[in-house]
Image (cartoon, rainbow, N blue to C red):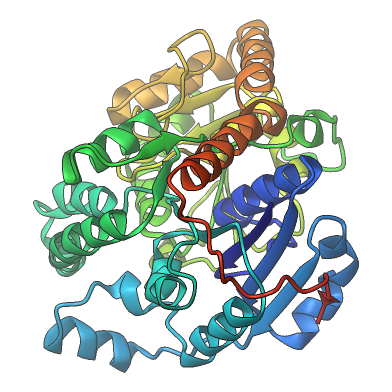
Amino acid sequence: MRVLYLTAELPEPAHAGGTLRTNGLLRAVHAAGHEVQVLSFATPEQLSAQRSALAEFCARVEIVPPPLRSRADRLRDLLFSDRADMQRRFYSPHYAQALAHMLEHTFYDLVQMESLEMTIYAPVVRRVQPNTPLIYDSFNAEFDLQRSIWLAEKRQLSHLPGALYSFIQWRRLTRYERQVIHTVTHTIAVSQADAAAFQRLVPGCEVTVVPNGIDTGRYAREDTTLDLGPAALVFTGSMDYRPNVDAVLWFAEHVFERVRERVPEAKFFVVGNRPHHRLNALRDRAGVQITGWVPDVNPFLHAATVYVAPLRMGSGTRLKLLQAMAARRAIVSTRAGAQGLDVQDKVHLRLADTAEAFAAAIVELLENPAERAALGERAAAHVARCYDWSVIAPRLLAVYESIWQSARLSGKEQSHAPQPTPASGQR
């Protein structure tokens, strides 16, 4: 098969949740013998820097300059339209034009849109290659994510503007994501919870769970380049993402001091790019360090005494937890943080939802090295068995085969499709 992926970022370097997922899927599809082509937002400099890495699994990569969307643009859409923010986040007439050109000159067996933002280009695919199967790979059930944020923040006066924003986006995304699911051939969810949300949204829709995965071997390799001390608590993630910002603030304000009362040497490391300005208040707090962007999270994972995931909102599954599990870390998470993962409390990690219980679980692990080690070993074995790409990828490939066979049996192949072009390499 020749598969075209529509992505918001180049799949190299794989540095965050979306690119980690896309990178793993593309490498697996290529390894299975299919031809992978990509249309993405990037600068020529970014493409040049990643050309050799992309050539390992992409036959062709086309790029369009990243779109510019100001706060004024977002505010205008919020106040004077009924469109969800995500519908416009990555809209670009140049991208639409480049996509139409590719579709007019190359026949694709499948087109896959990576994230809800990229579904804005579904009409272009339907117009130029109307019979080509179209897949929506959801990173989250986005309407449900905004609903969870609204419910978490609506009773906090200081968070009321953000809560109202999420309420509006929840309603708009409910409408838009329903429209998308009706438009595409198949929807891919990252968890059973998200799949159930989509089924409630569009009863009877074609949805398959293809969980997030990781290259477990990469994170299992011991890394001793960092020493963060004997009681290092580590959280990782993009720090301009609202659920992550909320998690860090809640932990710092309600959990961390409870831990330090019992373990004074405890330190909290917030590891991730683009720290939100709301985190500035923590920079002078004793024992808290906000690193900003780091080239690799692996040293921080292996230097963590306990990995913490104090998330209170969100959907999908957390790649950060899979990484920490593969690194054999003892983890304390909320149930929301572990949502969508097949994990058990006190077997693979510790689960706690109140500040008191979260702090108590951390203290217990800090004071018990043997339990930390045992928890980490069980977590690593579990993630290798259930969440390595070698286990996850066949689920996606089975979806492809099923869709293509159904298309052939129903006679929906494009008998007058554009002539295939030879792989052009990266441009």
